[in-house]
Length: 235
Image (cartoon, rainbow, N blue to C red; front, side, top):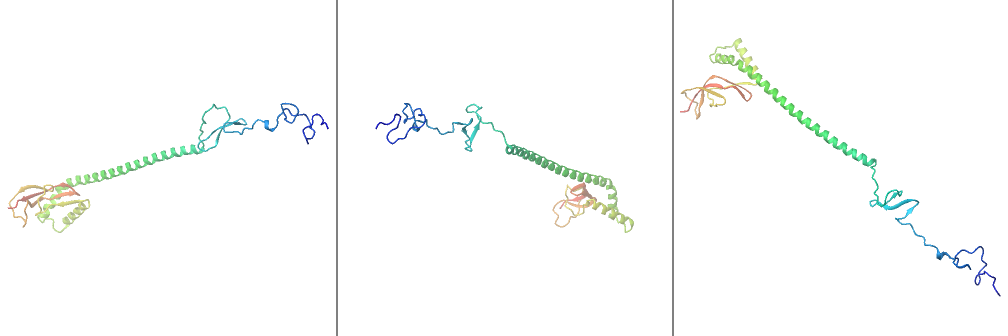
């Protein structure tokens, strides 16, 4: 039995609709099926999706760097500092400024301490100089008192009480009287006005004070006037 024109091979049903161009099952030449479709290419890192170029990848994070395609090929991304970077820079500047202010404060404190020490030292020197001037002016009076005591002219009355009060005031000011018979002669504290022959204390081997003509006075470690004495040498 003869098959109608346009029918497919054995067991095939009738062909409905127009034949697809290139369909191998079509009677028309040049048809195609799923084996003739162009291969679908999966997008790679170098392709453009929806106008967005993702061809570059951040090396540090692995996240694609998005570009709108306006930048030239190989152009780098401009870094815009965020709030963290701005805060970090400001914090560093504040730390440097704080360190400078602290150093200035320490320097000012050291200068103040040195200034206070210098003022205290100058005040003490000025006080000692004032006392020394007063003592030097009083030396003739003190010498007369010493001579009166040596001769026993002070007695026990009012003159002796006045002298005792005066010497107490001098002691409170730091003034000390020194020089007595039997002291070893010290040129830093004694002024030898004469050298005489005299009996020395037993065991004396150096020049010795045998008579005090005028006592010496010192203020602290400073000798205001050396003791004026007569000395004798050992035999």
